[in-house]
Amino acid sequence: MARFRIAVNMEFVRSADLDFRKGVEVAAKLGYRYIEPMVHTGWGLLSEVGYFHSFSMEEDPKLMQEICEQHGLRVSSLSAHSPLMKPEAAVDRLTRAIVLAHFVGCDIVNSDEMLQPSWMDDDFAHDTMRYTLTRMSHVAARHQAYICIEPHGVFTKTAAGLLKIVELVPSPWIAVNWDTGNSYLAGIEDPYDGLALVRDHVRHVHAKDIDMQHAERERGKVTGTPVGCACGDGVVDWDRVIEILDPLDRDITLSVECGTIDEAERSLAFMQELLKGRLAD
Image (cartoon, rainbow, N blue to C red; front, side, top):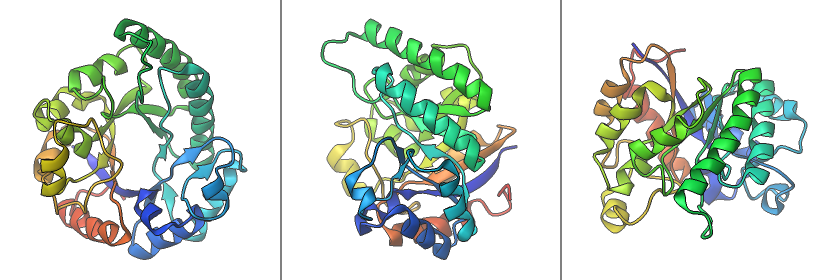
């Protein structure tokens, strides 16, 4: 039987123009115990002036842990989305994210395939992703960290397409981060059938709900969206999601992806009620 943790993706403070330190403080005050930080290479202008929550991997890797410990929080996973079809960027970015994950005590690094270049056909794209993921599988094995691919792009908009990427390299360290909102918005297949198909590979879930207006406006027209509404306020059948995941004999983090502080607060209350008696710690 699966055991669950509730986390919040730091995107919830983007609309409030808060930096990482302040975002961690707010997450703790709301009652979260785990967070999913976004990480980047280089020195992002908005992050450096305190208007954006992403954490630079140029910093001392222990700094993230120090900030979290000041507020009694732990890192559940890292949002390190990298272009798998662009290995000159993805290999460095994911390598550094895996090393950072090791320092802060988590074993999940989330990504997706991102954009397909116009000059790259599908076979070329999958060969390139195979190269990137082969390189990364060795790093992941050394650090015992999972690279979790989520449904968000042109190939992963179907569960079969997601599974094809995950299985490009025979490694137990390449897994799935199921995004409940993206899979619904793609509108190509039943999202619960899709989850059931990839379930054995799932190590992490982006708990993203989609309100009815958003669904009517974009379903079938997009392959994903940055954030959703408060969990429980939208179209996702959360009982069914938990039922599908239930046979997995491992801890699964449900990382809330919503757009405002108020939505994060309401999502936590909803998830705590949903998972009553099922939380890992």
